[in-house]
Image (cartoon, rainbow, N blue to C red; front, side, top):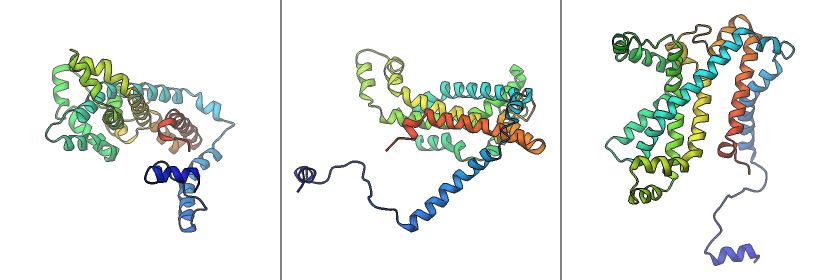
Length: 280
């Protein structure tokens, strides 16, 4: 018996850890796996092959593209900031506080993840439109109108992106040891001070990962944005909307814009490689 086998015998069984299957993959698994890989990768490769590389600088430096890019970056960043301000406390509530109906609240929070974005845009119109449940009061009392404005873009993007942040932060909070917070409160700190001085530094990586995911989701939002905010160049036309419009009139410009969004997505995955792309 080798040393590893002897050690396993002494501790009462094989060591727990990552298990690797030696040998080649069976053909009934290998073939559909390769088909699945090709199905996911081939469209991206086709996008690179059909890209108008020679005219790319002219396409990407046009005023329409820069307007859409600047608006997309601004609105995605603002939507992420909104998600951080209200999403982190919501994640803390779901992770740390026991209350009746917490499972239902969690389901409602994650609902925008599976809700068709167009349906989300219609729901926002019914709630925050000029004649909506809340929108009519915003208009009458404060003169605030959200639909078909840049602020409406931020609202639509935050609606679809915030669940990514909440899920990430809640998972990090559940993994963090709550005894540190309890120790801080026993030493005289308030719950908010313990959260600010103890919990936030502990969960900072989870918040950062959730913020990046929310930002990327907001940057690529289409359905809720076009339904709630419309498609007005310079005011509500973000990059995905510009791609949709260019595809009808200028396919080469649509491909160039798509490559920009593809590059952003790759950058996001590279930034999250420690969480989502762990090496072997």
